[in-house]
Image 1 (spheres, rainbow, N blue to C red):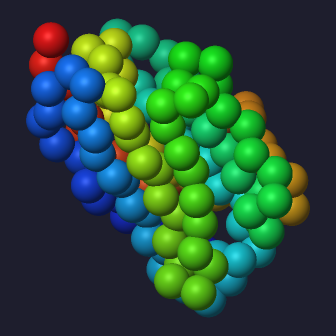
Image 2: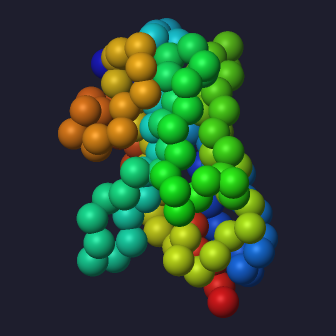
Length: 124
């Protein structure tokens, strides 16, 4: 089994930046495709970005394209999400998730393991 722990959330003003990190336990992180999702109160969990096992394939939601950047360091068992040009509508709990597979996964149900989430709040 694998466990993920997110960190790096916080309160920022519109236009600001944050860097989120998701660190995995275990020894097989490099075999997992990873993704970031977010969920605001009263709303469904929303896909943000996904990355393949080897980091060669990426898929960004249109709402964050050009502002957010995903990367992974398999040697550190960590996937990062750089949040730039933040907007109030980006406010949500951000979750990382993994699936033991090669390619990018977009659908939440395709992910087997989830972190506890980290809160990102953007003031107007």
